Image 1 (cartoon, one colour):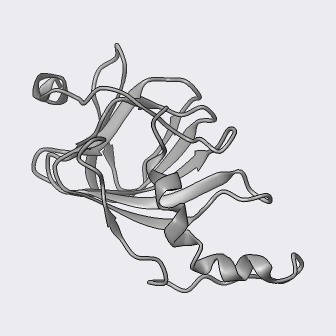
Image 2 (cartoon, rainbow, N blue to C red):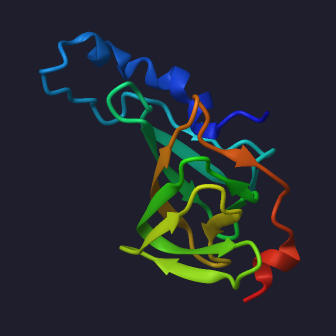
Length: 158
């Protein structure tokens, strides 16, 4: 069983976890820059990718959030999510593909719903970086199942 990129970064999120000790009725603010960025692991990504954890899944909301920035040409490996994933493209131009379907271009302001168990990938267009907010549901502490890398041929098939 491969671990989730976001779950691997949850340890970093625990620095902001001091807010978890506050009473549930209190509003909590996690300060920008309080969690360090991390490089997307080469095992799960092609090219330069930066992951900025935003929040971990917890007892109150069973979904983690992270901002993922792909440099031009960078992309994730094929993967699925047991509870699905919602992407909000925050800047740039990206690409996404569901297994067996055409590659689609995504742009700033677009949202993408990745249903549970659907094999897909996402990343940047060849000449443009892209950043998206990924909100990913969790089942039994797991939010992603990583698979094989996207080949250059698959990436370039548009």
